[in-house]
Figure (tube, helix red, strand yellow):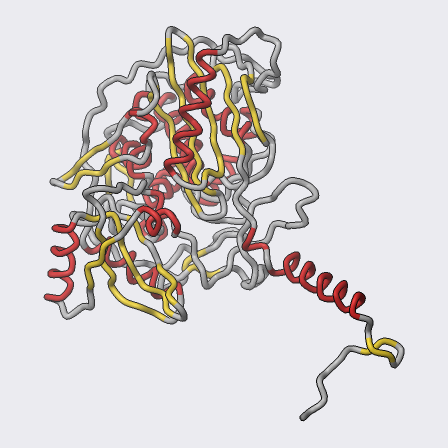
Length: 473
């Protein structure tokens, strides 16, 4: 029998206790260096009185994390500002560049060169959380998404959002795009204060065009009395995010919940927090939200804002299958750009072996690292999962790597938007295979999708889903 290997120190076998400590130390080092994937998104919240600025409750409100699609609140803030100052009109058109049209889901799948009206763009951002539209808005207002992102960050600073940096217009993953719950509360109050004439768009729950209807993600609108906005968001590194505003008996509150583990638990936390807030009268003794007007030097309290959920017109959203086009050149070094095949690729300066994680509390032993290029984190699963009559999905292939599976699922949803309007992509890892799946369908829609795909000699299989599968991906 061959000799068993053993570690030696000074020519002697390492004592058992020493060996135990060595193994423990190695395991700790491995967790510290490469096990960050076990870390969970930052969980934080804050609730403020939108009139007085008083902070009624908070938890980890200044811990840095990722905004995800809450980024679009600032995109709309700048669009509303341009509308207010006559720089653009609701009836003007916004053209989609190759870069805008190539943005990952959730999107409108608008082809490069196509146009939509400004009001349609607003509704697609609020209801659909369309990443392609948000990018197109940024390019329309600033010439390029990068220039727009700089303007977003400058505006954030002017509003008092000291810990927020924007690097894109839509909230798709970027390791440098950061925010806090407190900063999102500042932005929520600023939208109420500065653009009451446009705030009603945040109450929209659906819009349609050419027979295709898009449903929104914000279920709190129907769960909390007086709720009338504002925005949901999700990427894996951030968890499920939400900013809500509600008015009861002449009192308006703004709440922020970041890092929810599921849409249901995030919404439940928001409703409970806001319900308690309305039952707890403010006395002015709490800390105040440092909210500044964009052109002022000091903090300012938000004035009383009464926002009615005014009827929202239902303009059209152009829906067409769009190929994944190449990204525009000249993007910032830290941006996760798309290559010509639509796979997420990180710049050479960023390691591809690290996991995209939020900054946690001091002492956690975990540090911020960036995304693995083999595991792109598109925002397609921001669509809230519906159990019940949407307990089916389709599988359109199995692949040895994540990126091709993701690409296959995205292409299918873009090719048949009438079927996959409110679906969600769920890449299911099974052994060494990644199964390209789209969930959230009715049985009839799943069978219809597979019939159309098989007619084109494409693989497709209908399967039954459950809440656990849909929420876990």
